[in-house]
Image 1 (cartoon, rainbow, N blue to C red):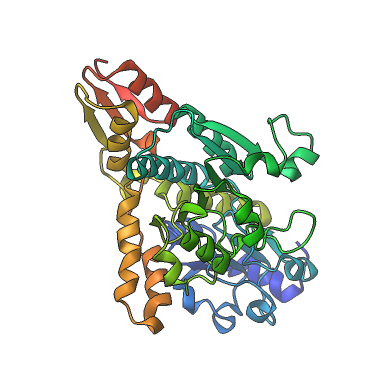
Image 2 (image 1 turned 135 degrees about the horizontal axis):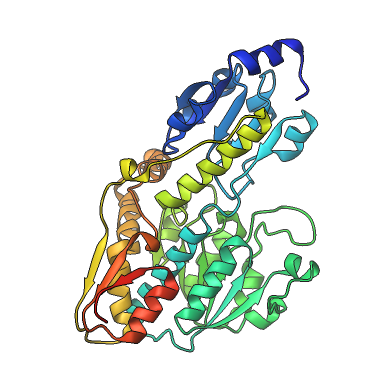
Length: 398
């Protein structure tokens, strides 16, 4: 590790680690390595991090020259898969090591999309079997979404030009082949330059290329979709519905767009406890490698979430997907997040950004499907098979 003598002494004898206090178990994990200061997001300022050696942030913190100039920070980690809040060029120029948590919450997002699809089918009165959906971006998240939606019986089309150039074996298609699908879901990073720039990727021109009456889902980054253009095509009915978990200019979201969408949530698609702990573990292990220290972290999830999660299914009536929706809602009810976000309409304009951020930082414990055991008693074999494909444990007489 290259640094001046003072920094070397600090790193060896008095390591100071600043973490976002809303990252579960972060203090307990990093206390193994040094002195930890846990700060709320607005508290992570240049003054507060100037004597830190290591900084662990979430997506709300802009990591750039104005935050780090004059500090002794030598390592930055983000417990997120996205990196658009980090000026990676600046970090590289300053010799500051940077890591993200790519893939950490990908399963969480894929389960969010599963819940969304089951809700849309119920709200809009359509069957998922044979419904076509285009997945744009088939990385850690999109590939898991693909498998789950195929399990639901949907016709899935894939697009990912960067992967295609790398020679991926996935059945990738040109973007125009996806524009006639019933639904499009976006799983791309936010980038502003290069051949695959995604800033305002879905502008008015692209939105109008979508099939009339189609549905758009965005759980990637808000600025991938142009807000004003989306409002126009929704008002005109060119696309029938939109589901948004991400918004331009978060946390100061456009409430008039929220009024138009079918489901709106507060950038929490990846906020399962399991995903958060995966991200923490990835950051912790990267810091240990940086310090040439053993990574001996063990997280006892039973201490953080001791609830035993059991779901009982007796003989069922109705369609397989109707019954599946009822089971999924016992794990994660997307309508609850939609209701919480819509309370923003009762909040004064100047306080809405803080309200949005508070919904995220104070988010409830949500566990992924593999934590649940479904006990079947006469439930159809097709339903049990589908539950297993989606990641549930199953038990009992089926």
